[in-house]
Length: 528
Image (cartoon, rainbow, N blue to C red; front, side):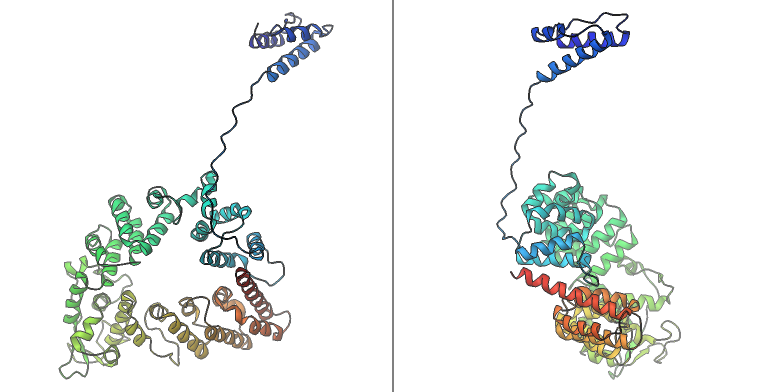
């Protein structure tokens, strides 16, 4: 009798009861039979349980061990040096999210800086912390690019073995010759946008080919954001694709394609817009002023080139059409046609060609055609990244804060070199304080230059002295924690010491000083 038969007899006896069926004889092996013969059968129920126990022991003792699992191939060697020991300890603090003392740094905001610095310096983190980094980046997508780079071969190896970390395999920078195609085919929408954007920065042609491969099957809302990613590395090779996109069934896609083409030097769309612009704006015969003849309608050609027949904000149609044409016109059109510099053009009075007055009767009421031209030229300067025009449009820091156009002067400022942006913003802070500074500071390169950092600290001091509350400047304070030069820590600590105890500003300055000191130590540790 086999062990299976023994067990079947035991089961049937248990089901029927020992009073209706005699105890079986176990004969799976001589040893089992001998052991079964020793069982006391005075109590049949107890004896049945003993016999079952003998059968189970015999079965388990006879099991063969399974084949040993195959040892996985280890992760590829990482030639990068490890971070210094102090920097590794700092990473543990950052990942734990506790600074260890009140009023200290916002560690959630400082982990990206640590990762970016480690990546820039070519270090690798401790292997024991790589899983924690992968877990952290799983819930914080903005960290993934740096985490992929910093964790290197070990991060990739671990991601292949843990489904929760598979996002790394779809993240730009992941290893493997087919990584871009895999991300594009398998990634989530946000991952695909990130992939396309980053690939444009390194290989614009490959990114365009990737987008072409799936363009017809993409949803309209997705096509819009994918198209917007082409602004990085925009070049003549993109013109054919963008011209075709002008015929897209989505109005948003058409408008985005037109905006990209308007920023592409030498594009056919730019030439078409220049023709319309010169028909709408002329230099008076004596060169003393500009004459405006706003478009009287939005024809089919204008619509194909991305101009909506109606303003989305209810603006006067003629002013809307004129603004859209001028914003898409190459700026060198004006200097070439009128033989004037940007500064000279902006200084000219503007009149309506129909009646010769400066203020037109309706289309641009309030600011006149001069304001319309200035706004459109500012938009063109941003699209075309034209620093000379942006510099003139921005001008010196005004005595009173003013808005050049929607989102300006921050967008104009972003066109200028980093040092110039910082200097202009510092001058603005000295004149106007923090009230309108958030977008300007956001346009400045980080860490902020020492002069800009000094201006920010002085503006914070004036705000505290004026009796305002810190939370009214929460946006600027958040930027300041991440961007202020760590060298400003002593000045901020002095403000904390001078502030009235147990006040909001005392706490704010103490926190900012702690953050700067934390950042300074963090950078010093990476210097080894």
